[in-house]
Amino acid sequence: WEERYTRDPEPFDWYQRWAGLKDTLLEFMQASHSILMLGAGNSRLSEEMYEDGFQNITNIDISQVVTKAMQEKYRDKPGMSYVQMDARSIDVPDGNFSVVVDKATLDSILCGEGSTHNAQKMLTEVSRVLTPNGVYIAVSHGQPSYRLTYLQRPEFGWNVKIYTVQKPMMGMTASLSADDKENVHYVYVCVKGETAAKEGS
Image 1 (cartoon, rainbow, N blue to C red):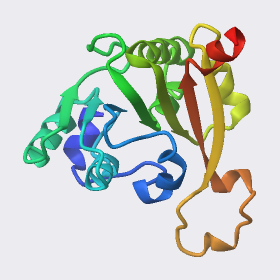
Image 2: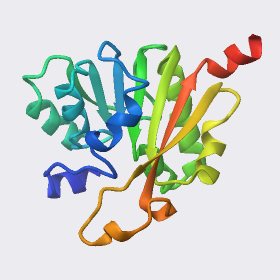
Image 3: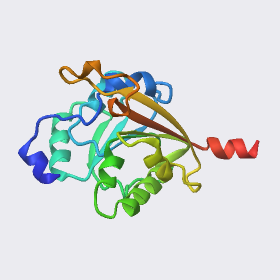
């Protein structure tokens, strides 16, 4: 990642920009929420959310190169912070964030070595830093049959809702059908505390 961001410092967005996600996510987020952005890279998602009124965003990324560049770029935006951190070991107190947003970070971990173990470590950390009724939002290319095994673990107690959003169109692919699996990204909205509340009612 260091090499990539050194070689190519231009903003890059995996999968989706805020415009493509906004309609799905606004139901679960409020401007007053403290938000953690996992694997923020040099994506414009946080900037676009900030401009839309979400001005308490902590962005973490494993790359020191990109974190420094983003600290510099957004130093005039109060409430928008960038910290070099590993999502498998998030150095913040328990229950610190109302919302954790993950655009392609879980996917990235699942493509690497020790993927199952590392994904479990990251999701355990996500669960820990969320408030008791917080929300983890994962934007992924992975179909539910591949992702729910990670997200629906009983120790997290998450109620997982699945949404799909159209992939941004490149060139002439607009003729693809909307229900084509290859043509959508999945948005997994994991609400903490809902399953426990249901069982106790």
